[in-house]
Image (cartoon, rainbow, N blue to C red; front, top):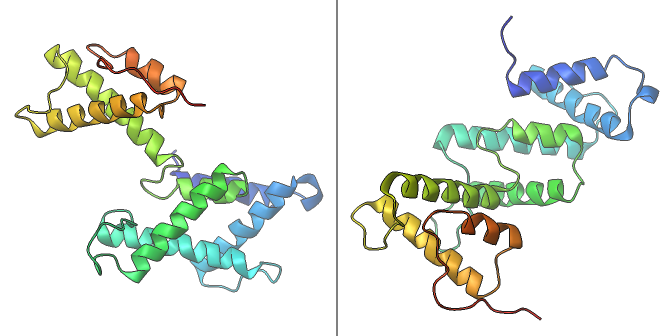
Length: 205
């Protein structure tokens, strides 16, 4: 039997929930069903159920626009204000802002199960992208030290080595300014060949 992808599994789960009496479902499941039924209507080009709020359809349309952008551009929308004027289209800026809003809302617990799982179906979606990027850098740093048995150098010949050395330098600066969490500090201190340098960290408060 073929394995379902994440979107197919999401739809299969809510097809099953749709067969149950509404009274047997939690409020979150009942709200999620509105999004499921609305998405089915969009996919089949049929009118959504009359009880479907407009905001549900608008949210689903935004997901579809995001996926279309990623498929067309082969990347996520950017929101970088340092790029030249005109480098980011109105559509891209709108989508980047929308994604940021969804992450904030999901982290705050104000998105239903269907919304959270539907976003996770978008290729490359991460709820905590900065945290995951930080841990990816740590993993790459460890791989480098495991391979070369030394810390990466800012003046190294390899671009990857210079990038990892730059990451380490930023962590030391953040440490001195008291901006790293206790977990981040402990993670970095477990790395081979790690050093904080000679300057002590700042004391907040």
